[in-house]
Image (cartoon, rainbow, N blue to C red; front, side, top):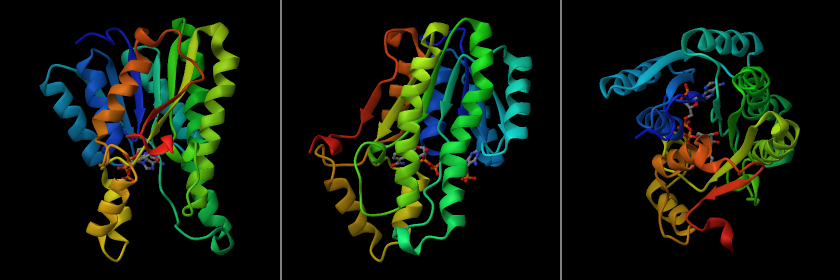
Length: 255
Ligand code: NAP
C-alpha cells in the first residue's frame, strides 16, 4: 500500500489504457499523481476515481510535443505537489500504417513529435526537479518493437527504438544524481490504441486471435501488467536498476 509513499509521479497519457492503470496503481501505492493527457474528460475521471479511494491526484491537460506546455505543467506540478520524482513517459501514438516508401514526411514527423520529442521534453524539464529532490526514476514506455521488428508502422517502431536508447544514455548521464532511467517493453496490451488498430482490419476478431497467438502465454496483456512493472521501477525496490529494458510481453520476444 505504501511502496511509493512520498513520491510525486507525472504520468503522461494517463487518461486511458496503460497510463490510466499506471496512475491508479501508483496512487494506490501512495504517490501523489499528476495525470497529464490531451483527453480532459477521461483524465478528470481518473483523478476523481483516485480521490474517491483516498489518493492524491490532479489533472493537467498537456500535449507532450509542445515545449511551452511541458515547461508550464512541470512548474505547476512542482508548485502543487513538490518536485517530480517519478516520470512515466507513456503518451504515445501508433501513427500511419504504410510501408516506408509510401509514408509522407508529415506522417513520419507526427509520430516522432509525440513518441520521441515528447519523451525528450518531459525528461528535460523533470530532471532539474529530480536533482533538487536528490534523485528520481524516469520510465520510458517503449515496446516489444523497441527490441524486435515487424513489417508494419515504420515510424512507430523507429520511435520505440529511439526511446530505448535514450533511456540507456540518460541512465549513464544521470546516475551520479541518483536518477535512474529505464524502458518498459509491453507486448500487445488490450487498450483503446490496440482496439482502434484492430478496427481498421477486415476481420477484427480474427486479427485479435492472431495477435494473441503471437504471445507464448496465449493472450494479450492487461494494462495493470504494465502498471505493476512501472510501480516497481518507480519504487526503491528497484534502486539498483538503471538503463534496463523491462520486458512484459507474455514471451513475445523469446523467439
Ligand atoms: P492509448 O490507449 O491510445 O492511450 C494513450 C493516451 O495518450 C491517450 O489518452 C491519448 O490521448 C494520450 N496522448 C496521445 N498523444 C498525446 C500527446 N501528444 N500528449 C499527451 N497525451 C497524449 O495507448 P496505450 O495503448 O495505453 O499506450 C500507451 C503507451 O504504451 C504508448 O506509448 C504506446 O506506444 C505504448 N505501448 C502500447 C502497447 C499496447 O499494446 N497497447 C504495446 C507496446 C507499447 P487521446 O486519446 O486524446 O489521443
